[in-house]
Amino acid sequence: MIPSSPSGPRLLGPLLVELRSARGWSQQRVAAELCAASGVPTLTRHEVSRWERQVRLPGDFWSAWLATVLGVPGELIAEAAARSRRLGVAPAAVDPAGSRARFALLTLAHRWAADPTGGTSAGSLGDALLRADPVAGVSPTAPEGPDAPPGGARPRAAPDAPPDGVGLAALRRWDDLLGGGDLAVLGARRLRRAARGYRLAGPAGRRRLLPVLAESAQLAGWLAADAGDPAAGLVAYRLALRAALAAGDRPLAAYVLGSASHLLADAGDPAGALTLARIGYAASRATASAGLRALLLHRVALAAALAGRHRAADRALAGAAGAGTPEPGREPPWLYWLDEAELAAMTGRTLVAAGRPARAVPLLARAATVPGRPRRAAVYGGWLARAHLRLGEVPEACEVASAALLDAVRSGSHRAVGQLTEFRRALAARPSEPAARRYAGLTASARPYLPGPVPGWSGEARARRAHPTRRAARRGGGAPRRVGSD
Image 1 (tube, rainbow, N blue to C red):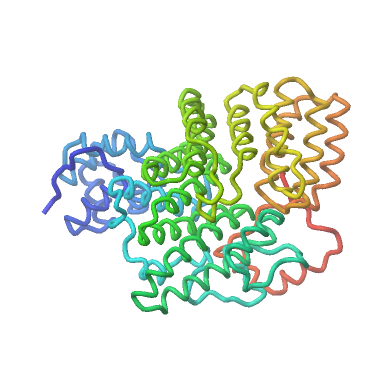
Image 2 (image 1 turned 60 degrees about the vertical axis):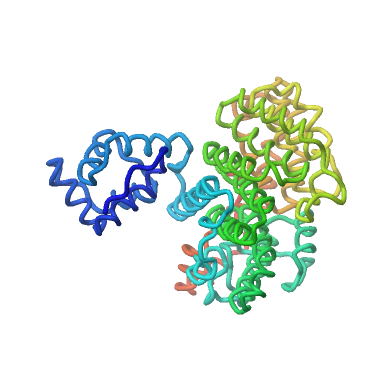
């Protein structure tokens, strides 16, 4: 039986899967029916698969024929496609693994928004773990030896890194000092142990372990993204969201979506970032602490500013200011890092993205010079340098960017390099400035020591294992590998 039309617009991908399954058709059958009805013989099942995964959205022509062959009103297909496009579910130009992970996370987030109790969106977590993508480092059969790069992260040399058995709290504190290139491998191993413990536990033990699994996956996702592997980060965030929903922990689930929103904003996907941040805030604001409400509204504000929706950004900033400040002793342990200086810097970052650099400078200056937090100093230093540059203050901009560049080297954070890359591109328009030339020289000297994107475990890492001779040849060179912002 064909399902009746729902009361409101749906996402197109899940709708097409539901309509096709109700008829008992394969994707090949849908493609054949579309070709026969439209008289266009070139459509294949691969295009149907892309529509269902929302890697692409059909245009008006195919939307009309989809409604015809599936036996539903044309408005149903058109409204679902429009909603998917409006909510940013159709992905930006990213790698295939990242597109799939992004779509899966957005779909799960929308299910939570439709069912705030989280019952249907959590699904069967045990089955999810057994089917887990090894790119997230949680596959039951994934290798754990020293050569295995779980989570797609390849560790840089870090003689002072914590042992593999480090706890969640300690690993979070190490994250204040080291970047994802150093710690992502440990975060992924920590997640694998949590997933294995969950699978082996009984029903009561699983319930107790759900929050640990959710927090382990959230931290693994954060570290993978900081190591330059956003696809692995998104996969881990999806597992974290499912575990948090299964545990009934709305604040933690919202925090996961806020972290994923941050990842998509950094990856140039403000529409997806805005969707996740809004869902997280709307679903948890009744139970979230003051600090978490402020954080989620800042995620909304940044994504809106990057998307050019400045009024929405201003409203979110006003809401964040009214949410209050983090309250010691009343915030969740995973939010220990949030303080007034961080919130001020987040406001400054959004103001730069919204084209108001003058107001942003004093808000960013404090965070850009905080001692002992190299990634924070590098990230906000990059935004501060961009603010100075937009104000025409080239020497000041280059001075701030030079300090941030050194902090990026110290932190080993791919995320820290991102803002400096944006600054370098903007500075290229002023090649004759003496300060710009000096900064270009410093960048050239620092580039071999800057963190760069790491290859995903599902791709190049496997290829290297299959070609040990090539791997040995790569290690044989004496010159440092040039990575970084190019």
